[in-house]
Image 1 (tube, rainbow, N blue to C red):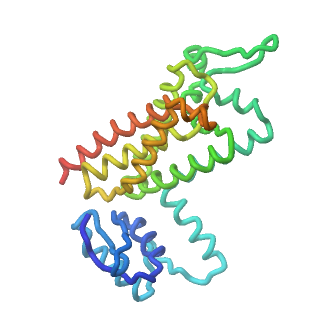
Image 2: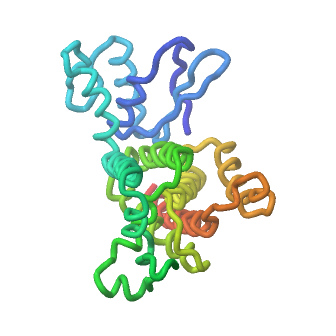
Image 3: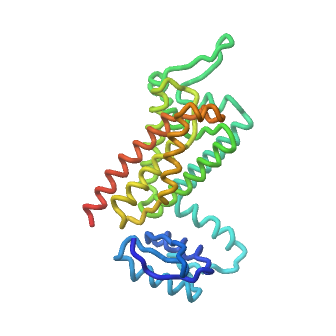
Length: 286
């Protein structure tokens, strides 16, 4: 990262940040004693960044299509939809998770049976578990990914969606929706298979994908700093520390024992592998 310009401490940089991401200019803004420091990932974009800053300071339109932030009745809706349009894969994934959670509240176990990694049912009062191989062979290919969209409580859902939005939006802004879709599919399936291999069939959540995104973004920021990726080091420590904590007996003692640890680890491995590959390509292309 390269220091570019110091902005006033009291300045609201929200619009400038959105415009920079929309123009695919990798950056970050840090709080300094003197004010807000704007950093740039790629020095080749230095002039483009300064032009945007100058337009922002003059109050001119910043977005690529040139539409002003006018007082039109739909301006508020447009500003709300802006981030969703910039990260469509992340937004659709988040929306599907919310939809599945809402449908679960209405239909209950039928949704779980339809989206679990293997077919589930009740026979003579006992849980009947199907075979993944037979399910996929019969055309139920969605089961390889669908458990990622199941969430079993508000806290489970909220935290997974926060990390999904935080990391997914960054991936789409810097490398496009295709890259985000690749990570989602590879990590979702990889995490589910890792958990299934541990002998568990009733599990769910987007956390495997979240850990994959963490690993991917972290490696990109470390091995290809000019790519524009950034993740606070303390966030990396916290998330990895949490993953290790939930693997211990202490987690169960305080009510966090029912965690898909193998899915977390599987997702992280997928993210690190993808991050290593793509950061290596980014370094060779410099």
